[in-house]
Image (cartoon, rainbow, N blue to C red):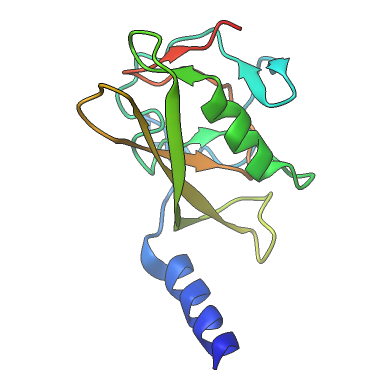
Length: 154
């Protein structure tokens, strides 16, 4: 019974929302697109230096933050990215994983070239809203600071 429920949950998550990776020009953006080397503040925190001006970056399932992790480091890379963020006034952020969603094709997927995005709730003390960020742990992309956030400096 427990195995059946887990299997049904996995199938539901995979089919819940399908995502087609396209750029603003309609080109497919499948797989790895990273052009700059990732630098870390420490083992648990990336050093982010570029602010995104794209309102959809990380906030839209069609434009997730590509943290990569083909070697099994995907979940840790997600935390490294989130640990690098602060609120707009430098407030420490807190986050929790809301689950997976939004199946998509990727050459880096584990099963049949498919992947799932992870949804994280991100907030800070004194903030008005909890933000939802979509992270892709399969593919590598340039890491930017999403709109409404700043980067931890140390």
